[in-house]
Length: 88
Image 1 (cartoon, rainbow, N blue to C red):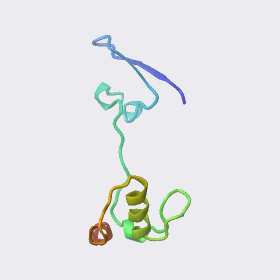
Image 2 (cartoon, rainbow, N blue to C red; image 1 turned 30 degrees about the vertical axis):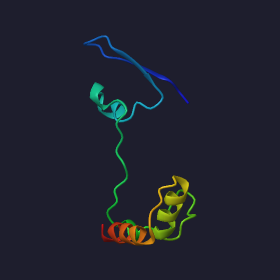
Image 3 (cartoon, rainbow, N blue to C red; image 1 turned 90 degrees about the vertical axis):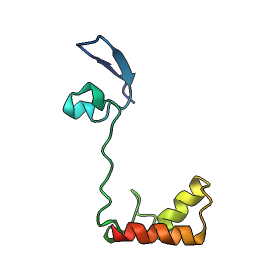
């Protein structure tokens, strides 16, 4: 990964980062490390999910994250989350 060294010309502050984020687009010091996430509108209509299409449904996505990060969601919580994401 490239290492960026950014210097604030007004304050002289120096930051080294591998992910400058929106600062690369806006040129604003305050935008270092900020990112714009994907839009969730219409998410239910964009199956399959993940970069390789390995999750066919939103429930598959929720199950993956519940297992991967050991969240411990109940089946009702999973269903409620899928219903919420489907409503967007």
